Length: 329
Image 1 (cartoon, rainbow, N blue to C red):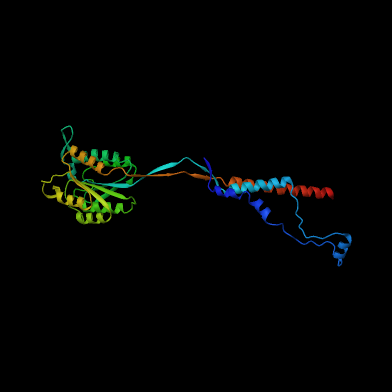
Image 2 (cartoon, rainbow, N blue to C red):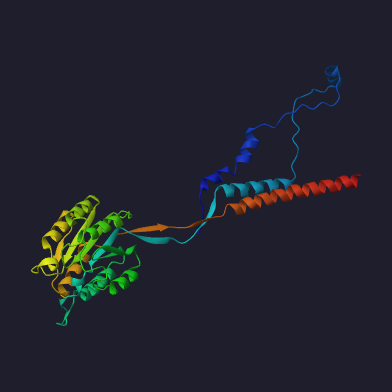
């Protein structure tokens, strides 16, 4: 639609009339014949001299051109615009970072599938995590894989298809055989430093204990708490195992509780699916709708028309005056 951005400028339409009415014409003394006894001559002739102004008369074409140009200038001052249909944008209010353990132990075939067969832990993680990403269309999702060291696979992005593709291609051991749990938390904290969303959530999944980090996991959790990052920890290993394969349940619980998150244990694919369904429930969709209507300025059309009208009038007047002078000569 069309609109005037400053409609109050239309109040300037009667301004020339007010000036003509309130401001007297300019007075200028013009000498013709100087008589030292002018007053005596005027009295003898019975004429009373008066003071006045000679106001040149305007022709109707000149008046029409001036009025039209003034109206066009006032319309230009009112800033006519064409307002386009509204554009809407959904701005995410939460970033979710998935930190997945890809140590060699993730290849252990001890996860019960829904059909009763046993499958490697990593296969269950691929299926469940990919499904979780599908349920979060309004959130930006990032991905970290960690083993001997953490590796950022995807920055925070709305391209969920890319994240799902990366999750489907995860292989046990590609990040090394050990588990750098604390360092993965540190990397996640650094990734969150570049985000401006009000909610920051990290979902940490591991099947062992920290065996390769330079930063202690609990220390990293304390830093995450100061940064406003909520960490949900998911353990899928064997708490009864020994050595590097033992799931450090106590540390995962402390990490989650200290940051305001929750700890979950998944012993099979169904339990893991229920965990991610619960995570989807406790992190409800939260989006901000932005709407704006692009505006196209049109003031230059009436302004240009005013210039054309005045140029045409004064150009035509000059040409006619020149023709008359030549004819008189």
